[in-house]
Length: 509
Image (cartoon, rainbow, N blue to C red):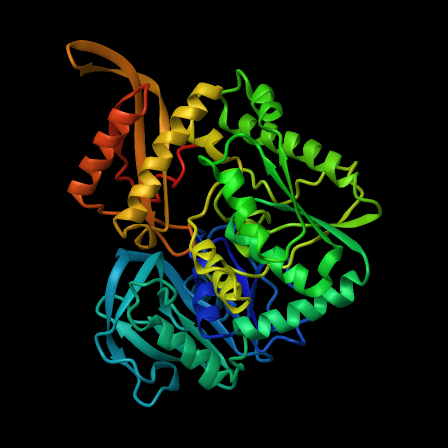
């Protein structure tokens, strides 16, 4: 793997977006906590400092050691990083006189500056800070200003160090990607050689060398990540890969049979295990979301372990972990608190004496799909919406019963099939139904009913880190609502969730 760009994370909510924008330029990059960088920087071609919720003036502010970076590697400091360089190198950072948050426009750009090549005056940028740089650091030259921010961008002469007070990584910065490309490609001369084809070639060879003739067991979920991981491993080690697909009783309607059928023609060695009753009995009476997740994780490990022990001499456990899981599971001073436990990171119990292999741990979701396309995986499978590891359990608010699972499976099936039939499925990033722990009064025929309420959820997103609700056509929602109420016994009211993330989350639990 090419270690081309190092991103030091100071806890910004946008750090993953920086990485995504860099990857879009076909440049490999990695995120590390600012206080735990790689010991060896020799393979990196450039470094980016992220923003941060902290003020550089605060006593507990992140204080990185840049002695091995400044003047030795091309450096781009974003927002907090720009203020940090100024504050500790002869400049001055002070509280802003006005609120510097949201859209702004570049009112001045230094002529002939390669960082702004192809960027026009008045280009929109996104500000997000309460401090501002009043005085530039020693040796610095101002490169750009907005109406309210004099020192919006600067560089330090005598070294390849650039700093900007805005966020080029967000979509609101209209030329942000161009600026990143200017810095990384034109100024730092980082090679653009990270493509799906190159990833497949590199990782397959790496897996062959690492795994040799060892046996590997993989838990398939039917989703994109585990499927792509399985095909990569199959290409590397062939019949030494053993796939297990466990039905936890919380899958979508008919999903267990459908997924097994999909895998049949892919050349994968897959065993299906129906453990529905075991999972549902263990979940009985549990209504706390995190306890549900942990119970499902525990039972899955038990079932998986039973099956793995039937294969002799297994040495490796493969997982479909992707990069956001890895990043969010690393504790860094400053980033957002853990929102939920990740079912596929750090969940291996001590009694499973297996080494872990994660072929996709450096890829974002959209990159996994592109790799899958390179591998020739069916586009319909690659286009599947993300589905939570704990399944429908976290879409049933409150305790789990077989009847509630039945109701939600039927509702979900009508909604998802409706999206497909009306050509809307591929326009939605993730969709599903939620069974609420409330009953409402209804009228069917001449009788009053007192039955369940379901919420429909459909969002658009690129990676799940942020999401907006989808404006589905009213006629479509009316048709689906009528079909659910008429066909699913136990439901008499349908609502549509129009919350975005943040402040809400995609799932309700």
